[in-house]
Amino acid sequence: MTPTRATSILFKIASHNIKAINGYFHSYLVDELTDRHMEDLRKVLSYVNRYSDENNSCATVLSTVVGDIHPTTRKLYELVEDFLRAK
Image (cartoon, rainbow, N blue to C red; front, side, top):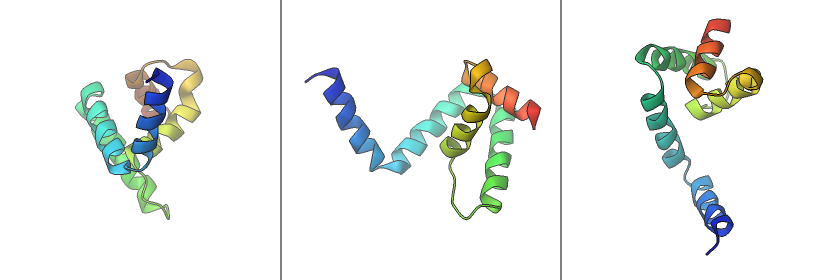
C-alpha cells in the first residue's frame, strides 16, 4: 500500500467519525496550549455557539482563526496568542 492510498483511507474513515477527530484535536490543543489559552478558546467557542445556528467545534473555530491570521504565524500557540490579543 502506498502512503497516498493509506492517507486516502484514513481521511475517508476520519471524515465519517467527526467525534474522533474533535477528540483528537482537543487533546492536541490541551498538549499545545496553556491553561489560560484553553479557557479563552472555550469562551470564544461558547460565544460563537451562542450566536450561531450550528454547533461549532474547537476545530471549526480554529480553522476560522487560521484563515484570519495564518500568513504571519507558524506555531499553533502563536496563532492562538495573536488571535486572542487581537480580539
